[in-house]
Image (tube, rainbow, N blue to C red; front, top):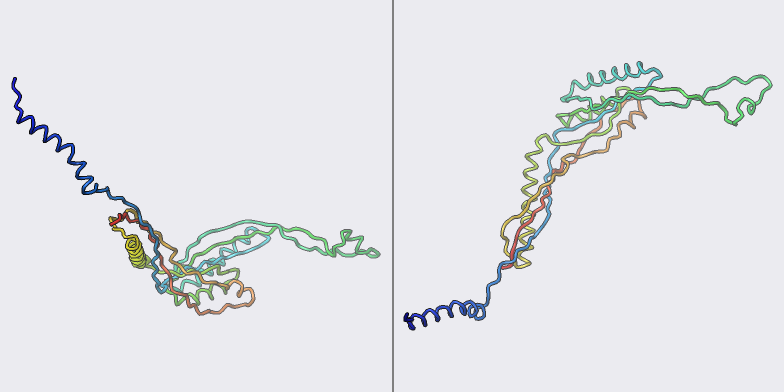
Length: 264
């Protein structure tokens, strides 16, 4: 069998080129390294202020008596009286809780002094009057009043505080259409987060590839003022309307953003 030397030389030369070419190209032109990726993270908060257009008023009606039935009856009457008084406003009244409990209370009991006896003989402990305990029954009803017109809040507080055994606990101002303001807050938070990441990438000499993760958290869209109508009601027989000037409601959205980047 004859071997074609010319063909053999050509095949040998081709094999050498295939084996040596990668080494020549890597040494002569430098081997191209694979891209290295890393993450750039940031957190930003967007805030939108809105004028309140509703309020939630929390009221407690509390009655005490030596009789359980009397305490329950009086509490029901006071709740009914309060609900009727509030019916002239643009409100919704909801019962949030109902408590029924009892407790012992100290009550001093005077004893007549016998002729010829001394205070130390009647009260060996040295106390001026002996003490006895009585059982008192307590009934509490919690009401949530949703005011759809913030201009009526001052009058509502006055009406609630002027009903016997009724106390205002707190007022929470808010907005009805929260979702519209949340969208604005999200857009603002995303804008800030994106801007922060772009500045970081520029400072690092990096190129942004794509967003890896985005998480959004919302804040509480309410404003809580300090209400002292219960204390005022204890000091006076009547509580008059107080001007209500709530601050704007702040709706917040916090965005956590992660971008994949690579060096240029």
